[in-house]
Image (cartoon, rainbow, N blue to C red; front, side):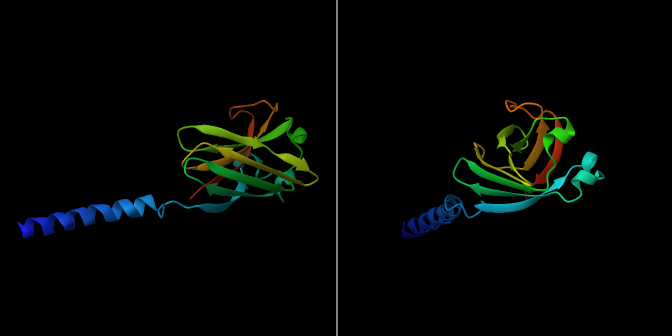
Length: 145
């Protein structure tokens, strides 16, 4: 009987350890940073030669806080559009983070998306500040590792 109880205790401990590791969130990256790159249609254009952009992600239990900053991004009117929209995707769906707020040569946006994992961040030149879907011209992008 004591052998049975000892074996049962070891089984319970063996099952409880992986659950504790998963519950601690050790497998999830809490903060991430990445560079956004100019997409292929705009790589050779002179107005995009000095564009730099970064994205920072901060994960919580069910949301991701996204901050995108750009430098030397041309005005959207030079592309025939009205604004830049930032989208985050998880492979199955896309959610708008927000619109870049331009100030001189710099632009930034802070937003929150209801996703547990983000795979890609894209910046689109769009024709309206009411765009909810990825339409227009994709100018910047990054894969989240």
